[in-house]
Length: 116
Image (cartoon, rainbow, N blue to C red):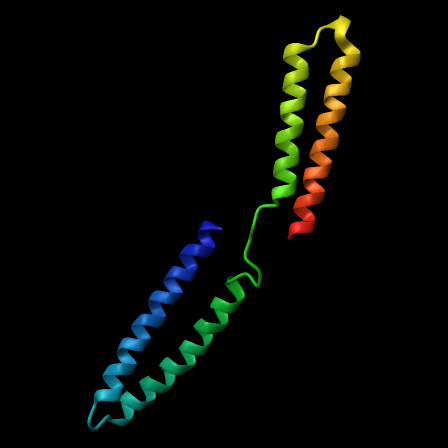
């Protein structure tokens, strides 16, 4: 991802440079044929850069799945609680606690999925 961001920044910088040269060309009173050819090459390069940017930019924004993260946190909390506070004589209570936490986690996940 960092490589993609660096590449996008480089391409945008190159676009800005091309735009600067295009402005200079637009303000020229009498551009010679070499300037016109350079302008045409810059337009070709601009279209190539725009195509690269479209390919590198995701169609949808990347996001973290909050349902998975929330479920993992709740499960981790339930297992941590059961590990720290449950002894062998309270096994049934601990199993019920973990089961309740899992059910809450599943309900939370379902709610987040429906909210999207």
